[in-house]
Image 1 (tube, rainbow, N blue to C red):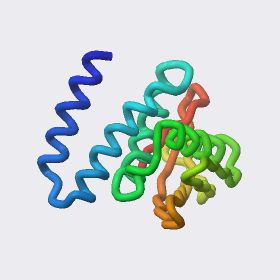
Image 2 (cartoon, helix red, strand yellow):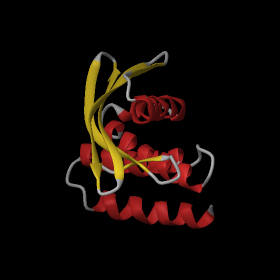
Image 3 (cartoon, one colour):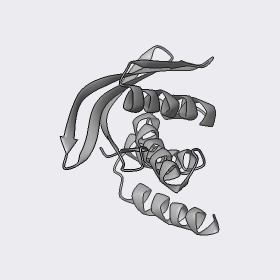
Image 4 (cartoon, rainbow, N blue to C red):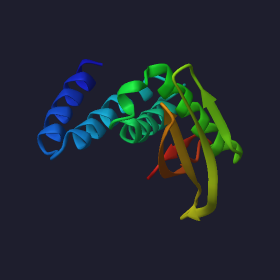
Length: 148
């Protein structure tokens, strides 16, 4: 855990130093924070890695102006909605007192031997939407990992 914290601190410092605007800095910090938060959820190591990667994607999406309004519980709700789309291939929604969002499945295809699904995640805070697209692929053990 200590090594992860040190690595995250160094990564945040390097990433923020390379950002030109406050919004870019917020996105970078949000991605790192999302990865750390996401890695705390899930069962085994593969699932924690997937949660960490999804947390990074969600954190990057919401790390800019919208991200300051979401907390760890909102990020967890967002991640769980993404998992529903990856595994079940159906639209999934989440809601809290201050934010809400939905994830919609997209095209499915094979990348090598891996079954993959594209998805679109839209998050609303204060009525302002923020949308990102991603792809997740199923691992041999049945877990899913976001890949882009």
